[in-house]
Length: 316
Image 1 (cartoon, rainbow, N blue to C red):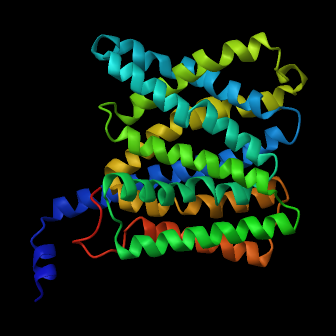
Image 2 (image 1 turned 45 degrees about the vertical axis):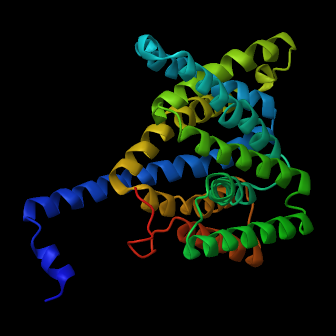
């Protein structure tokens, strides 16, 4: 009998059942998160290619998100220090208005599949590179291989999409910029004492305070030109599902599955987004584009370190 088998048999049946339930629960939370994030690219592209503009999408996201998330800050107001509020402001400048504006603008010039294969998947590459350069955290060989696969797949997607008229270099530049802001946010967030829900609340509230006054004052709104159905879709998706629900479900998935497994499952975002884009937008990728999306997804799985040897595997 091997050591691994012996240790497995030593685990009580109740503990095994608990682990299975925890795994199934974590997978369910992860599935919800993937569905919301994948749908976000499709729903946002629907908005920016019809009546609404990318600045309207941003306004809806943070106006509704601020209303829903403000109670988090109100309840904890007495324990938030000046540094917490400054951190929250910094978070809003990284993963708040600038991020959403760049993604929304980029989606006006690229397909939903290309955008979903760029923003969330390039983020671990940029974050890992920054952590290596500035923090001395050198990624293991498997993660480097994953980074290379992501970059190759993303560059192939950009080249193919531009050549086939499905996107532009400007659109991809905006998406890469958004991914860079997200990457910096993940590194800055690590030194903060705020949790994920609190950070999301600060992002929504600070973004609403900074963005909505000039948005209203300058008369930039096209909301009055949109149909009730279009507005309802964007309000529910941008303001409720993305700003609030996805944050909670992703945190639950990480808590129950661990960061490596959760990151690997997030590799399904571009795949699911591509399938949704085919049904909703009629954006059918070519065979080479499909191969590039699969390459990116495999790269994310490798970059997560899920299959690294236990000694080199990142901690949950």
